[in-house]
Length: 154
Image (cartoon, rainbow, N blue to C red; front, side, top):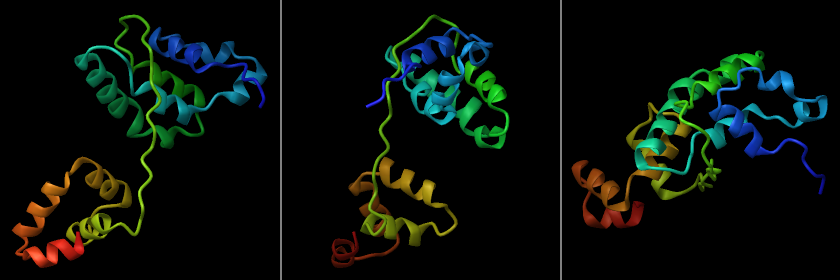
């Protein structure tokens, strides 16, 4: 496996430190290794107090996630937007947020798609992730489903 020249720790220190010219300091090889998408995944999760974690997550959602891919032709601007995530309180240990693999044929996903046909797949996946089975059963009961139907379809 090829050894990486650009570590994620170095990138996150630059992000936390609001080093606005960080992309300009990279060598050509490091620039090829740099991934703006990976930066989002790493920057949104930080070790620290619950308040600090919540701040980073909300800041990342507000400052990066909303229009990040609209700026795909402007990597420098993406980096500048990324530096706004940090509250400027020093550097922190960032963690990778593993993506959850969902079975698209899952009964829960089918239920949620039928319940909310106006939502996209990402929103359906999020609903599946944040709702417990008890929540989903309650939704089905509110729709007038009997226990037999709930058991077979959820």
